[in-house]
Amino acid sequence: MSSFVKAMMKLCMINLCLISLLRYCFSEECVPNLRVDVDFPGSDVLQIFSPDELHCQRACSQHHSCQFFTFIRPDWTRDSRHFYCYLKHTNSGEPSEVTELEGVTSGYSLKNCNETTECFSDLRVDVDFPGSDVLQIFSPDELHCQRACSQHHSCQFFTFIRPDWTRDSRHFYCYLKHTDTGEPSRVNKLEGVTSGYSLKNCNETTGGLTRLPPHFNGCLSSVYEDVDFYGADYHSLFTADYKECQRACTSDPGCRFFSWLNDDFAIGLYKYKCHLKFSWSVSKPPALKILSGVVSGFSQKVFQINSRSDCQTEQCEARILTNTDFPAHDFEQIPAVSAEHCQFLCSAHPKCTFFTYQKQKVRCFLKNSKDQKPMQSKEDLYSGMPSRFCELPKDWATIRYEGLDFPGFDIRYVKLDDPNSCEALCTADPHCQFYTYVYTSFYEPDFRRRCYLKRVITMPVPPKVASLKGVMSGFSLRGCHNPNKTEEATAAVEKALGCEI
Image 1 (spheres, rainbow, N blue to C red):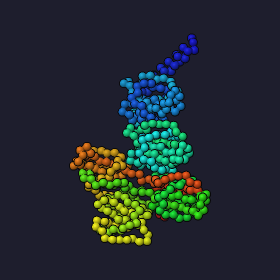
Image 2: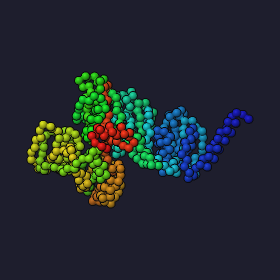
Image 3: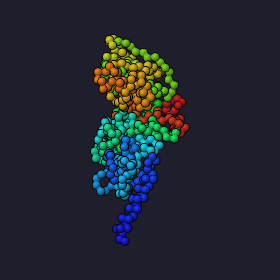
Image 4: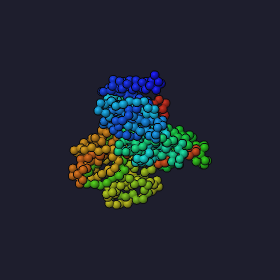
């Protein structure tokens, strides 16, 4: 018998064994194992791009008709198809053919497995998800970028340009991305970038253990050497080391991140200088629009959580001057639903020393002057000062605002019968911060009864991140006290805050 015939008989035996095994395993059983260098040819229902075979398997598990798949790995050499994921279906539920093929991996849908398949926490080093950008921000590393994607209302996946990127000067760029399918339209190998997915679906528990990765617990504890967080300064002081600078940031309620200049900094006059920096931590609609036929409001859970401070804070009453303007000294204009909301926002910003609210335009003018505060009478304007040492009431967050739209930043919408149900849904949804409900009286019939759930990024995001010799940057540790921390770490945060946690 020739060697060729023997080889063919051996291949047939392998195929028969594989098919017998598949028939034994398949039907309603869970078949999670992957088949390396095994192809399920034909029977394609959809081709998508996946960064690895696990993602391809999960995509198959979510597809309405996919039963099995074949993924073309980066080591495939027959043509330029890399990262191709073929979702497949047959009437029998089994592959019509099984063959050995180097460079591919095949497997089955996990629909019959008792596990959730939507969480993609792993990062893909030197893999690019090109295109489909919805926002570009700056991040000091890929974990920060992933967390920002998870907080963004529509981001599904991202690509982060690392400091070792050499093709141009884009370093620390974080591209947040979205497609209608929820999957990247392309997946490419590219040195100097890291890609990954939103963690929105990773906040479930399995066997009592959280599925969230460690960096998503609210604590941004990393400190970045020779990295500067440009801009957003509101205060500076000199400290002996970066740890003392970070303690200063942690103890200041307005500080979200910092940059400290060490002994390697080029200009001697500024060595050991600690720059405290601000970004908004409160859930505020980025835009307001007066619009008939809608009503808007806030999640009740968000502001219950935000009202819990690290130390016990005395309650106080809001004092706002009616028909009063504090002219000049503006440093920021932001939307606000009421004068009380404006005062709350002024109190949250460390630079704000007083404010004026314009009701007709729903605009809040934050102002800064430590030396003088001009004051004049003016109709329909409301003015006041921030509250730094007591907690203002948040009645404005419990009110619904008729005829006011919070446009954009939609997570999703559902059809409901009334605004009570919409507010209850927003409050129950851990991602929702505020909402807009469309009445049946709205002029456009297609939008009636829609409840739009909305959110914004509230984690600290520096306005720019860049490499700079002699600078160390990091974040406030106010979110780092948790039961898993050591007693020493908890005590350090307590000391910085000046109270017990």
